[in-house]
Length: 350
Image 1 (cartoon, rainbow, N blue to C red):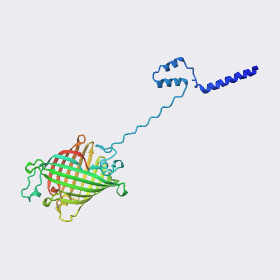
Image 2: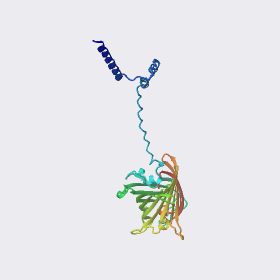
Image 3: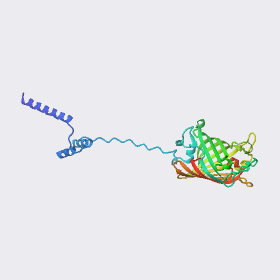
Image 4: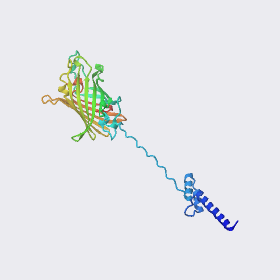
C-alpha cells in the first residue's frame, strides 16, 4: 500500500474513534477530578446522596425536586357548639347563609330546651281553680320543663332561594313536683305548634343588618276544658336584625277571631300585640331579654323575662331565668307574679 494511502487510512480510523467517544462517553468536568474527591463520594453511606456526589463529579445535571402537593385547609366548623366566626347566631339558627344550609327534614332546636328543678314564684295562681270544690294549695316552689324543636319542610319555596318553609313545636310544663299533698300534679302545660315562612334579607337599618322576615301562623293552648281552657291563634311578622354579637327580634302579631266560644277574650289586654327579644353572646355565655306591653296608659300591663345560659360541662349548660309581669303561662295570662328559676339547658334558641 502506498504511504499516502496508509496515512489517510490511519487518519480516518482516528476520526471515527473520536466520534464514537464523543457520543458514548459522558461529558468530562471542566476541571481535573482528584482521587480524593472520588474517595469522599465513596465514603457517603446513603445511596441517593452518594450517587448525587458521583453525578456531580461526572458533570451530570441534577434533577429538579418534585413539587409537593399543597395541603388543603380544614373546613371551618360552621355548626359546632360555639359556632363559627363566619356565621352569626341568626344565620346558624335560621340557615340564612349558603354555608349554613343543611337541607330539609333535619330536626333543630327552636326555642331554648331546658329543665329547671327549682323555680320559686312570689304569687302562685289559684284563681282559675276557685270554682272547684277544693281549691288547690299550690307550692311556691315547682319545676319547669321546656322542649322545643323545628324542622325545615321545604328549602327554596317556589324555586326562590331566599324563601324557606319551617315547622316548629314547643311544649312547656309547670310541675308541682314537691307538692305531695296534691300528689305532685302538673299545674299547667302549654302546647305551641307553628308554621313559618322565613325570607332572608340583607339591608342596613340604624347600624343593624336586617337578616330575615319571618311570616308565621301559631296556635297556643293548654289542652284543658271548661273553665280552665285557654287558647288563641295568631299570625305574625318577625323581623330579625344583628350587629356584632347582638341579635334583635321584633314581632308584631294579630289575633285571629275564635270561630266559636272564646275562652279568654281579653288575652291581648295582658299579652299585648307583639314582643321584642334581644340576644347577646360573649364567649360561651348568652343573655336574652323578652319584653311585652299592651301600650295602654290607663291600664298598662306587660312582662319581662331575662335568661342567662353559661357552660357547665361539654354540651351541658347552666340556665337561670327571671320573670316578672303577666302571662308566664296561659293559665296565668291575667295573673301578675315574679319568679326565679335555676336549672340546665342542652340547646339554646331564638
